[in-house]
Length: 238
Picture 1: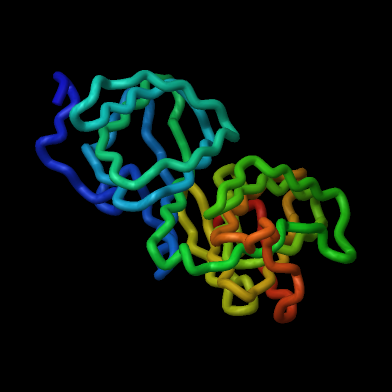
Picture 2: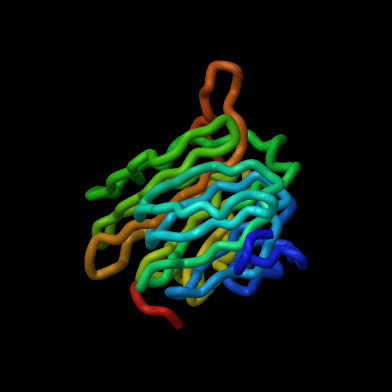
């Protein structure tokens, strides 16, 4: 390993303390990640393919085992899919925290069928849905809601709020909210609809990671599902 970046001991991503494991099930592991200014991670392994969404960008060094360290610049809103097997140390070179959301695709995720893209609920308004990533295994959307607006989200999906707002822990319909100081998340199971409601005082954005493959023509599952479940959001943490 190159000087300053020790990979003599490697931990799983779930055991790296700057990677907060928020959701874990048979299909995904989802992490809220925060690396403080001028801090660096332990050398850690990514054992599965994963989707990375950058919530707060900056300049970093990624020092992969056996390779020259690379200086990388990320902007907020960037999204990429990385293959399994990366072993590296990440150092934040900036003056602000480097924050991102990592959704790891476990082997059983390959058997899932992706739902249709998020869409405005029948009585909702003032909603924008921005596609920011699309791959044969997952798609990612930035969903911006004005106060009082609703949007339907079809599982299987991870909903994340990597900004100032929080997801309501009293959501209905067996959709469990996982609260974390960096980023609240929820898992919407396959065959479920969730209703995300914007009850903030101003427009806010959530990130939706839809998991699974499309059919041979590239179409996702249509929005004909079980009755809507409630996945409400609010501005203040508990």
